[in-house]
Length: 583
Ligand SMILES: Nc1ncnc2c1ncn2[C@@H]1O[C@H](COP(=O)(O)OP(=O)(O)OP(=O)(O)O)[C@@H](O)[C@H]1O
Image (cartoon, rainbow, N blue to C red; front, top):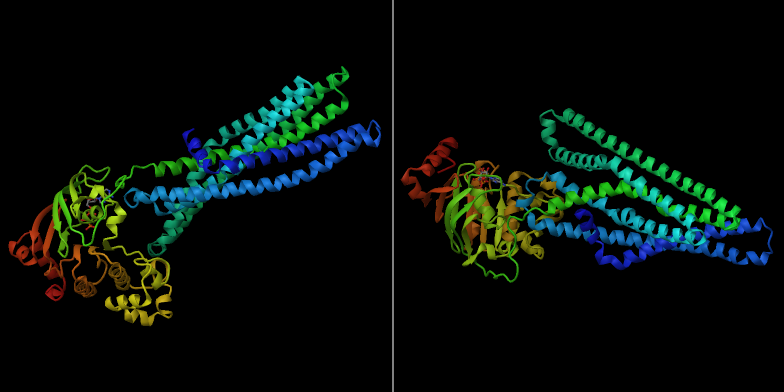
């Protein structure tokens, strides 16, 4: 129920329009009822051959209800769809705002396709929440009360028949329907989500699927998933069709009972035959408000499922929540100090970092090296404030990291990571991501600094050339250089470089690193790497092993100490061209 309550709370900002829309829905059905009622009166009375004057009011009534009904229906659609679109827009903004602070730590367990699907698919399911669920239910309630009261005024027993008929058709039939489609609704949402996630994965990793000859397996899996989805849809459609026909039976039986009991009242002279004709047709018309409830029932379960999945996702604890209230403002350049930091990832028992100390005043260059899984990138995660220390603290310009807002801190950082993400856009758009207001001149200058002029000359439309999905029309080295260009464009005093040359051949890697150190100027640098080259000029090198610093010092000191660094350096040296590449 709390899911339903939360969903309904999204309608609160539009309560005026919601009220108006329900009033218009009620008015539309009421005029339909009026139209059939006056028509019935006209036909039944005409059979008794009255004077034309006696029928005048009914004739005007028929015209009036006929015109008003169309008008009200139009207005009702206008208002209810307006509410729906506003609701959808509000939900989208709300969802984005809710998940953005969770990124990246809170979202890494999500499959990419699932994440995208929830953003799009579940919200689309919720889109119909007002028009198909809330509005019909409230309208049916109002119409049932109205028509039962009207019939009850003529003869209480007829009021009860109308009320019972509409209640059973409007509540019992949908309740059975919800029961029958409960599992199917859940299965439908789940299998749709799995299918979407799988499709995204296959499309993204198409090259690998083809390379490993797995395309047929993927197709077979895709067909299986599709079949499950279709089966659930067929089941839901059957239940819905059953609901539709039960609704028709409900309306037919109610009118039949009404005629049966009303006929006796006519025979006893308690009501006239004309009254009975009018009431029967009015009740029949009132079912217009009740029969759509079987669709509402079908939608209801899917809506609840979609709502549940979205809420369960956004309700995850935020691992690095921003502080509430006033936050200290950071001035550039920044001075970062890790003081005895320990970090344990959720679900892990072993700490990824243990009692980690590092001082990075403005202009200092520190390299973090160590074998895979040693905890190097974790230091970067903490520095970007994506995760907070379990114990110990990080100070930035003397402020505790916990008291700073992540976004404020990150404006001082330029980050180049091993996975450079290029958007499916032009070279210009990809560069402007760093500084949207950068001028053409600045863009050309930065491309020159990262030695990308040959690429620029080659591109048919220069800066406005489309780079393909995720920059697939570029080589790895070119992509890394674009990432460096972005970092250079950003007026940040601190560079966080996490394996910026991974995946490149040693020669290109060295060229890029030399270029980087030449361009770094007075910036502070935290360089995370496996590649033990071009580290001679670093102020400090920290060697991490299982989250602990086991060696620290300058390149020459560490070589002399003959520990892990010296051995790893020697090994890499012998592996790479007998010392040619690692001087
Ligand atoms: N999101 C996560 N959840 C749980 N454990 C994690 C997570 N990220 C990293 N770890 C674990 O924390 C430890 C340190 O990982 P980290 O990525 O910092 O190592 P690394 O030195 O950067 O490794 P590499 O050089 O391979 O990138 C590893 O044991 C890793 O399995």
